[in-house]
Image (tube, rainbow, N blue to C red; front, top):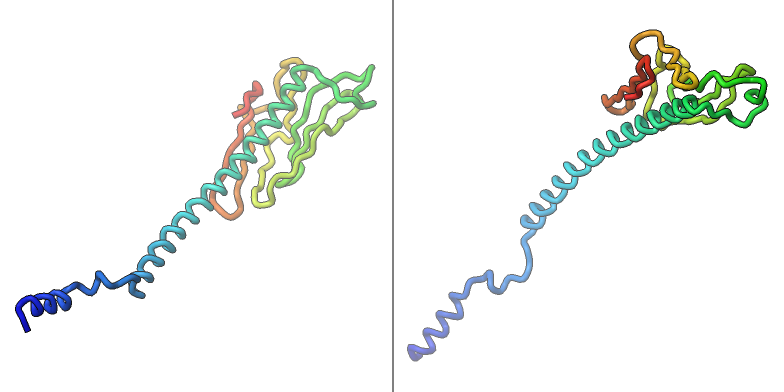
Length: 176
C-alpha cells in the first residue's frame, strides 16, 4: 500500500461521526419538549390571571358607566316614555339599585312611581356588594344624591381569585 492510499484510508476513518448524523437523540428531543412545556405552562398561568383581572376591570367599568348614565339622565331631567312619568307627574331622579350579587337596575323615580330603564346581570364569577344606601338616587338638576355619609361604596369580588375592585360614589355625585 502506498503512502497516498494509507492517507486516504486514515482520512476516511477520522471523519467525525457527527457529519453523518442527520437526526437528534431521544434525550435532546425530551429536553426540548420539556423546555417548551415549561414555557407554555408559565405563559398560560400568566395569561389566565391577566384575563381574570381584565374581566373584573371590564365589569367595574360597565357599572361605572351605568352609574354615570343614571347621573346624566337625572342631571338632564330626561323622563322615560311611561305613563308613570307623564304630566302632571315630575321626575325626582334616577336610582341605581343593586337587586342581588349579580343584578342591578336603573330606575327613573317619578312622583307617580318608578320605571325600570335598564336591567343588568353581571358575570356569575363576580359578585357585587350592596352599597349603603341602596338604591343610590341621583337627583334632578344637580341637586346631589341621597347619600348621607361621605360616600357609598360598591365592592366587586371575583370568586376564584382574591381580586376585588371598589367603586365609590361621593355625596356630591362623583363616581370613582
